[in-house]
Length: 432
Length: 135
Image (cartoon, rainbow over all chains, first blue to last red; front, side, top):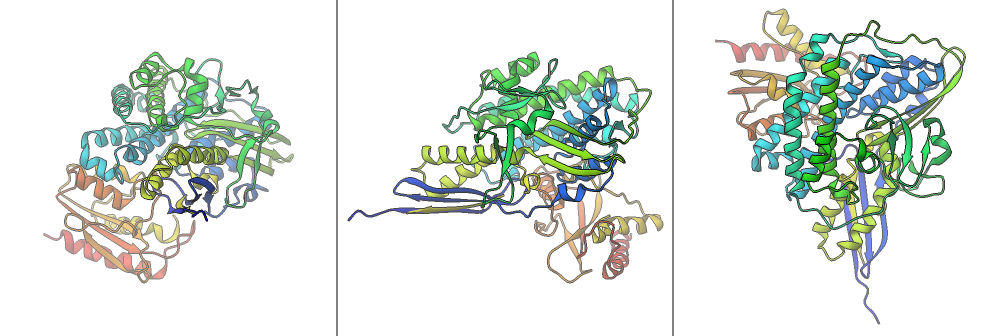
């Protein structure tokens, strides 16, 4: 009689991610019997509570979905409303939107890369241990993050949950002097973010690659952040309003967050890696050179190297911020006037974790009759489980504690925001 | 304010009314290190949830005590008070004298007023701070 060997590995509360989730892994005779990335944070029903509210309330209500990426919600919902109401925000107001979005990328990317993800590569438990081992790196990261906060304060009124954005633009535009005060710190930040990218490029990366279906936005003239068409490396090229024709959500029993997939049932990847792979040609000369010097090619399919990509995008965001700050002149009006009418509108932006899609229907008085939001972490869930399968198969021989660590690291490649997706990690591994 | 989460601002307002310098801060905890840079004595007041009775006033000497991280609940992607203090300690950025008052709250509903026991704790905390800074 053959003896079966069983391993059960459980991560009951994943750390260094936003929200509450778990991983259950059951291995029998050296093969994965079951693997579930569970999201158990309770749903918050934002889409339901938006019904009956005025169109103008959607940005501030949806921004409360996430304390890390409120701009993605403020701008995604604003653009959807502007689409429904037949207006567009262009010129210097669009530049201000790009500037504040760059601030959000910086805040989110620097904190995740330097404080939450880097400890995985150094076999340290948290950012405090990195601060003990390399205080200068942490001081630099904190200063970069602070500058991201400052951009949000200058344009959005405050660093956490900005209050100055609205459908049509802003309540008040920042003064030229205030925007120009960012210029000298931004020059320092470009060099400092290159230093961090090169430092992270020296990490040892686990041996895992995947041929991802990369889905991102693409803009004809710039590395897409706040608008553009939706494209993939498989030939997709659609307008934002066509998103529901190509992507769907499904409910799976083990997760309170819906799983995104293509209409043909396939997983896909959104976020920094997808953007980098689809839009590398549109990065700045310095961002491309930094990527190369940090060990990246034009295409990156090792998800663990996303930590480098985040710092390349951070450098680019600082360059963009500097460009906008240097050219800034106070606009004559702080917003485009909007008039309520019946209609349906779509909005999509590149949140730090990937595309965030919004659709709203309005009645003739501008009241919301239907709301649909697809945050990036929900879209990535299926791909996270595929990566976990691949990584567990590759590193099956690791002892349970090491395997558990590698699984958590795999999930943190995505900087998942479970709070947005519902809403991380308990790892439960069973080995028979 | 979210109910009892406004206790820090309430204490600060009372201190200002008594001509004592006090600031409200509702941003990223990582920036606390910048706020208290070059300061000799700093007193920080925040709401806490530790399971203690409503209105309990906890007092920590951050220069000698390690703050319990479960008192000051915060997002993993934003620094809370405990993370900011411990990071500042590692980076040698603590003020010479840092006292933390953590006041136990229960009701954190948006727009709710302070609980009665927390209102009383505000007065108690103000008196204790005055004693802390008395020459």
